[in-house]
Image (cartoon, rainbow, N blue to C red; front, side, top):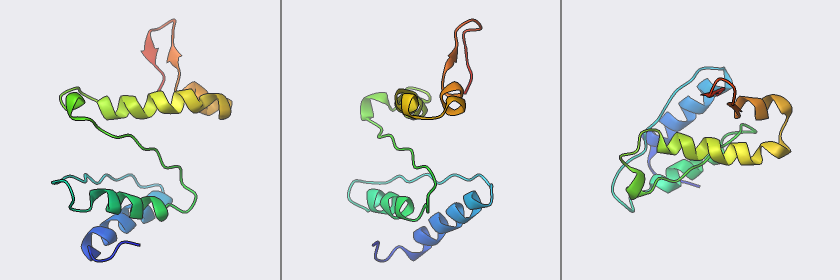
Length: 103
């Protein structure tokens, strides 16, 4: 349970409500250590009601690498792909002949 931060919780809950209706959205959670970023993200994860939750943690040494976070998510999901359906595995695989990502 997240106490306080009513406006931030409301924003998260609006984004999740939109996702349930098929609307995309984004929320950047940033700030100094100890201000409750992780607690807010945990609050969001607790209210997904069956939606898939993908997580990746950034590290300072990768801060300047474009799409490092996205890469971390996709690599992890591809490794899990053996336990997933064929369509999901295909979406996370590489088209070796064309050398392009199918994502």
